[in-house]
Image: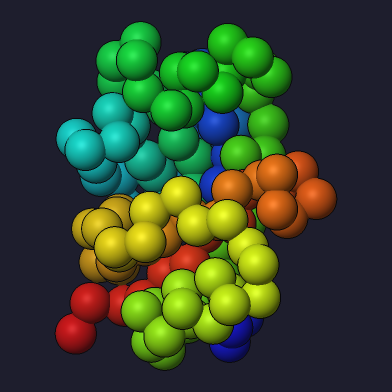
Length: 133
């Protein structure tokens, strides 16, 4: 894993949260994008070298909707940049981590992604991200 790629924050209302984070960082989101396969709308903010992703549910059955119902707004996941997501999935499986999707899927912000189950990572949802070339 090269670095933290971004921190994902689940929010109830993307417009309200965009306003809040724009005030916090002094800049608007650089990108907003729907990820239909996950039932989510995202906004991305840069703060120096750090990236924050806000995630709002677009349907009541989405993973973000379920997270918000259970835990409320807050940190949803930490994403790590990797060079070879397939090799990293295999390495982590070999180390005993539970992989939620062994075949990477398209995510937001020009990435392919895979997730590690929080039960194998001290309660933290971990996302692996590889830039689509």
